[in-house]
Length: 221
Image (tube, rainbow, N blue to C red; front, side):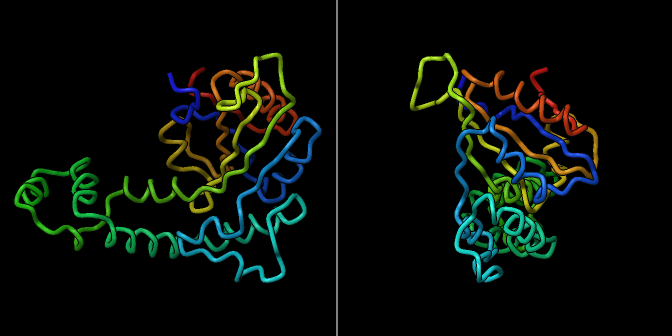
């Protein structure tokens, strides 16, 4: 089993009335979180989202600027921006990549065209391709809890984790479906942790969820 459990994230599901950009600074400022590392302002440049231009007075992401940065990011990552990103990327990727995505859900007619080597640029990008664009453009915040009794492994620190918000899909529709969680409007924060410390991270965020009236979901049970 991999040390880094990407396949089964812990989901911290906020209440529908909670704004993640307003809540996240407080969560990260809690004494239980010992250290934090934020992404740069240009983290989503590759998705065509220019935060530096949108926030000319902001020099970096910090606890003090996080609410403004994340709120602006979610506002910029609207349906139109996602559609533009998906269509641009679909045109740029290798033909074999498009074939791969199309074959995942291809019907018989489309499968026949693919076998003939048809150029697929004109075909509508399938849902899985859209989901992957959402997933690869998350807003990742690394954090560390207090070091525990586990032997320190610098390649996979047990007290280290990552919180991920997906600006193109804050409510986590794809994540909810993949993890068997019902549909909802509350923002989903994915929590990733190394297996050695996963239960400690789960317990920490369960305490946060209980205090806030939120939901914590773990596909591992």
